[in-house]
Length: 288
Ligand SMILES: Nc1ncnc2c1ncn2[C@@H]1O[C@H](COP(=O)(O)OP(=O)(O)OP(=O)(O)O)[C@@H](O)[C@H]1O
Ligand SMILES: [Mg+2]
Image 1 (cartoon, rainbow, N blue to C red):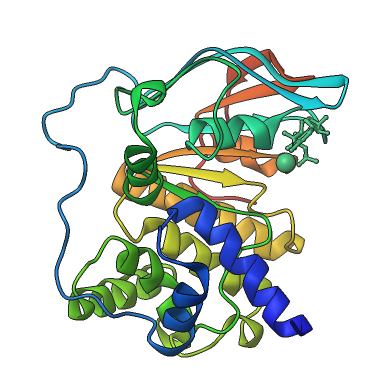
Image 2 (cartoon, rainbow, N blue to C red):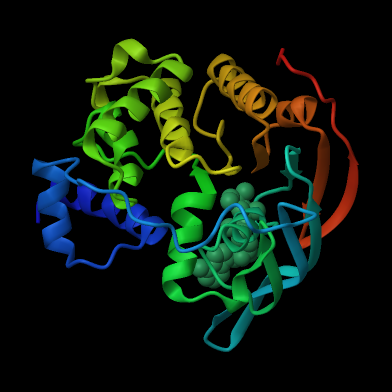
């Protein structure tokens, strides 16, 4: 395997964890390289979205995550309780190693807690099957990462169409949806660029558009400005806040960037796996 295929493989695996499709890996790789989108009919989601009621769009109860490393155990998340109302922009700040990513993975059904519970839109994740958890990751929660995690061989448009393909949205609809999303994040004229032909900020915009593809109401972002220069970081924060305000999307954003606190409705500080402080955020709509 040469370097390029290794890179594709690593990116592919990171998406695979999220969307969790079942076909053999090599088959999927061929599909991804040769026919980015090929689906004719929409599938019925595993849940009835309309009939569920919930008080908090995300809730964690006594959440624990301990990593066992041989004889050593690391308690990355320790007894976290969290209630997030729909439409909130919540920022969780903490130094490196405080457990932010671990917590975000638990909230987004990318990982399972050692103890405690997570509820997403009223669904108790501990009661869901493997397939239902995949459905939560695909349709209910959008993820944005520090290193974008775009497929390097695919254009901006095809990257955004990927989660639509996994939920079997018809090809024409997927094209249209991806184009709308590219316009929304200000990249209507970059549709045919692959990630290497985009700036870091533009790549993050594509990743945000991809997170929005299946219309989730929750976006989880892990250090979305961590790999960007100061101005580009401010633009991305502005975009996130804008999406939160204009569409009522709920955001949980973790990181070190204190500008995330100026736009947040609420700020929680995390240390050694625990919430140690909570305050109101600046609530600003624009970022300086
Ligand atoms: N897969 C793993 N196996 C073992 N320990 C882990 C694993 N992932 C994280 N940890 C440990 O759990 C703790 C929390 O890690 P986590 O990645 O959640 O921190 P973080 O706040 O996101 O840090 P950063 O700001 O550097 O991204 C750290 O002490 C880390 O070493
Ligand atoms: Mg982290």
